[in-house]
Length: 172
Length: 468
Picture 1 (cartoon, each protein chain N blue to C red):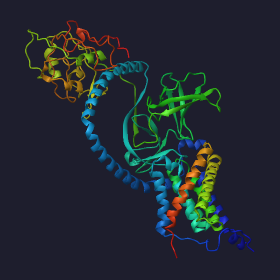
Picture 2 (picture 1 turned 45 degrees about the horizontal axis):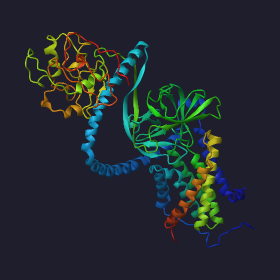
Picture 3 (picture 1 turned 180 degrees about the horizontal axis):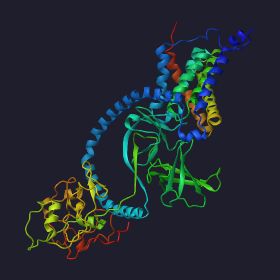
Picture 4 (picture 1 turned 90 degrees about the horizontal axis):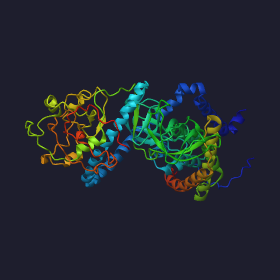
């Protein structure tokens, strides 16, 4: 017997679908904006991460969620000077967790979206730092202030961005 | 067993994907011996190449479109003040010409010393201008993408600079674009010198994107505002390029007897738009300039001062401006035993009108005086000024009868040059060029004045340098 606790009603566990152009175009657009807009604000904001979380949560299927995260993260890695895989691994895990969480929680509420994104940004950062320091031998320093600011900014941005991306969901 | 895979399908898939990525990551992490050879995984390099090459045309298009509109507006807006700006720039050119002469003396002296010591000199011989079209998009990696790649001759580890200072080095090269690792990335490093104290250190970036110099002992005196330049020891950045200025110096907690010196970068690394990639560095022993003797700033200043021409009744009449510097030299050579020193060889930039230093032996385009033998003993030099046209000269009326300033157009162009005559002139205080020569030096002797022929040969100018 499945004794899993779900905080969502049966109606809320709806698996959303997206058209192919949206599924491909939105992640690419997010990466493009991230590397093209040379604004300091955009280095705090992580658009590819937000898109990863959105698709993972909306689809509510772990495997597509983590593959989406892996692809987005790998493409993002290509623009950095780091070995490819740092963002890939971090976003794979976030994609998996996001799609698993989407089944359990009501993630269409702005408040829950903010908290969820806030938490995922922290998780993403922790995973990134762990890989960078332990596997790659990086020398980056953890900054609580910067990390919390990034989580806050991304959480607020997620509320707005997810509301816009909701319009791209395919309705049956 | 089958039930196990079905039940834990998702976690197993996650582990499989993570395993693949970790293995791929491991292939890229280089051992120290491989790191020197620059080996990178070919598979991951393909991912970078494909990704960056796919995005680059779109980025270029956006950048070009943005620049088109921005430049169009700026061109219109700039027209309003262009006349005033032109006047200011001409004055600036005149001032810089004076300063150039002084610096040239120092450079010549340095070259002589270097030649004596058989120093090898490295200098930039070719650069490629590039536009910044993107960044890494994260604060964990301070990388910018430029729109020039291997098709334009860009190679790995080439230095990237701006007129303000160094920017970084080329990290990855793609066919149409390249990634540049900025100097404030925490993986970056460069050899630097504190200009005042000549202390050598290592420039490193931090994870916060700051610049710091390490490996300088804590008993050294470092002051805020000290200028930091490249040492050239890393064989990437050319020596003597500006890096930044010292903000402060604190003790290095991790490395006790040493300091950590925070640096403010000379180039604005957050607003990079156009950069130059140093594609070729030449190395040679500096040659000592043989022919032309150096000129003092006071001499140049004296050329610019207006003077009252005194007609020599014995001299044959010739229309002013009808002879070139070369012909005047030849015509008066026999008549005048004394000579002024030849001017320093100068190449004229036809677009800007500013002179740039030219190597000896490469002065075929220079005007007459550049070809004269050293000292010019036995020959009168009719054109003792570096053949340049300046704003100061432009402002003076051509018909005023003053023979002081001798101007020339572009290099090699026929230059109206007055026949040298003993021309007394009233020296004036050098108000036109602040900082170029001290008041004492600005009162030129009669023999220093242009157009003045001393009865005694003076092949070299007074050795004293004007104080800075």
